[in-house]
Image (cartoon, rainbow, N blue to C red):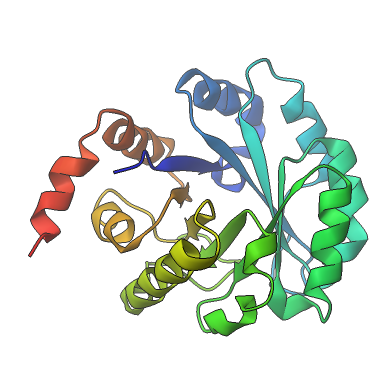
Length: 227
């Protein structure tokens, strides 16, 4: 079993102590920083800004940052976030008409392209682009709202995407965004997740999940779900 990546959702950090909590994440050797960008239109709230990303990337030993664009016109933000230091740039197929063109533009900046899918968006949206991307962000709650519970019916969608990826793009990272808790981790990973976005409001929950992954206790938990 491959190591599962932990992507710490920065939008769930205390905004008044953002850099302190970022230092804790770096010290814990978290795998990714998940950076939510929202425009108040595609989703009903606002997210993080490129100026914050620039400051984050100044940190020594800062992990890779995967930017999740929950915006109506993702193409307009590509150069801005590339210049701010983003490593991954994932956008929603529901927000645009020319996904392939956007993927090419992302690649031209040196960022790694990703596609995000809402819970009810069919996987066939990936049919002709899955070979060109490095990450799929599967929303396992409705986007833009922190704290919602995992939608268990999506386990079948995760399994199907894993099967498709094994055939067409074996190195694809399947990142699950929403409802990640110590209780939901085993079924998520068994279904095929490679990375888990931790969106807990309590920082201690994130540390608990980090402990489960890094100490190889995940394999023990998964035994509950065999057979």
